[in-house]
Length: 490
Image 1 (cartoon, rainbow, N blue to C red):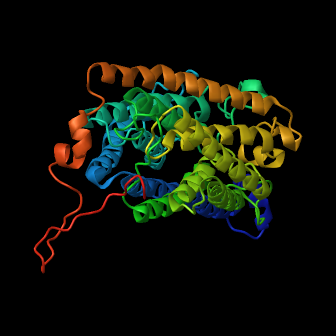
Image 2: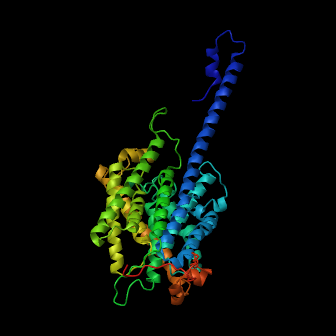
Image 3: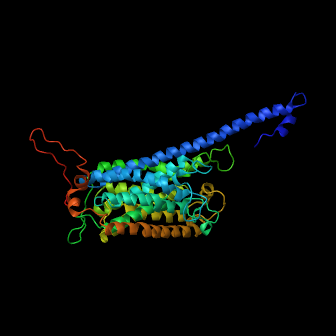
């Protein structure tokens, strides 16, 4: 409500010496206070988004630890360096091109056309905090891909694919489904099937893109030497440190609370009338709860499922199952009930186990199970959202069109599910048409895979000048102590 001098002055009474001047003074004071509240609202939302960006960026440390623990000791420095480069190269290319392709509006439904090099930023729609948050998402997609092609990929190939993925491939997909101008965005005025795609934090946009890109890289490179014996039997090439795997998993878990709840971008938003206890801050809390429940359920399901299949309680499998649950719930975390998140996590674990069985059957080698985890569980998360999205939550998170289609099992019809099936198909098609040829060209020009000799010796020694771990001599015997690599029998 605006303070009007003409409205206020008559209420000051006939004894007021200059009622108009007094009313003007009072209105100016109220306007000043109102402006400060507006400034505070922007500051709170910007701080919330920045803090979420810091959490998502901390996932890079989680990726680094998870990757390091999942490879053999002789390739530790290599995989750690690639994780650093994902962030560094991704930062420059997302600044120059990626952010513009993703968010540069007004534009067409396919690709953005403004904000190259952050020109015209800040604006009414976007601030620097939004760039930082979206960059953290972009490099997460690149980090997923690096896990699939670990232990056998040339350094130059990492630089090329990471720059291309973060500067072009990923931004185009995020424009389609997140930008207000995107052809399948839920914020577009011309909604796909009347609903648009609800991929809230990126089961498809981030996880499927990174997972499918990794799939093509690993498929074109082929398995690591020794992964399958001469008879075609699978041989486990276990990572050298379960401790690093667990540490990385917990860091990713922590970062996911910025990944999913942070995707609201704002927290100071009311639902309905102001002054109540329920608003977007409550939806943020619910999103954190659904994220937690999906991951926990997937971890326990994987624990007992792998126990039945292999006879072991395997901590690495449990960590991957946990992350699979997180990847799946990422699409619908803001629009589903907590009980539905348990279903999401349960099925995600089964999807991961099933895709791992298929990978072994077809002799596909992915050291971190990244394609199966992020690609497979991400696709399930998109389908899950089309089944379980609750109408009330959809209207709150995506205002502007009350009563839009929601989950099939929640009475919302099949339009949202249809839109999500379209999303899965176009992401597979787009990444296949871009990253597949890129990896194939690198392969043809002998820029993709290292030599067999370097692979056997380990890239830390042959490409990076030494090992990640220093070994000391035994003071009594004078013999050099060495790390024992797990054998097939163990």
